[in-house]
Image (cartoon, rainbow, N blue to C red; front, top):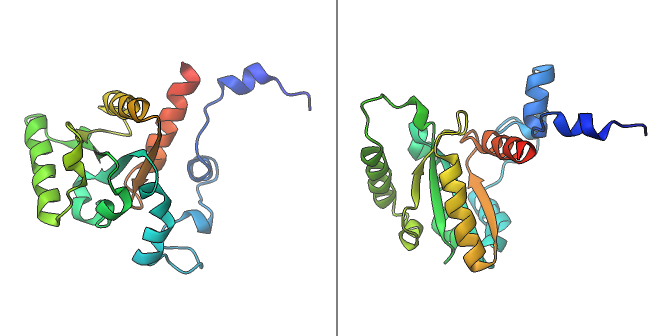
Length: 181
């Protein structure tokens, strides 16, 4: 094929959705939430799709948009997680006012989860993490926490979240960091 593997290794690797957006200004229909002609997943279908996670040992990172918390937190998170440890990553923390304390925001997230009846975070200390998938704020410490738990449990880490919570941005940041390291 006559490929320059060194040059390819230097290129930035991104997900398919982001590639289409960056290079062509478009996203394939099946990669656009709410725009596909495929039938939308019902809550039951979504839960069934993720059911294998609850049946195996796993660490779950649940990503939410802190500015659309109620709209982006998965109401079925307890059902998805089962007895597995869950870290909740509250994305877009870089957009907080500078005088907003981190502990204040984390406590607000905990109260909102309690209000919504989501209890699966109670099984991990330090389970609420403020992050910015865009700038990288809080990502390394969150991933280190997830890796340590996963190593202790000898299991995989899963990333779950609603549409537009920042999953692709987080995955791209992780890929970019691995390529640099």
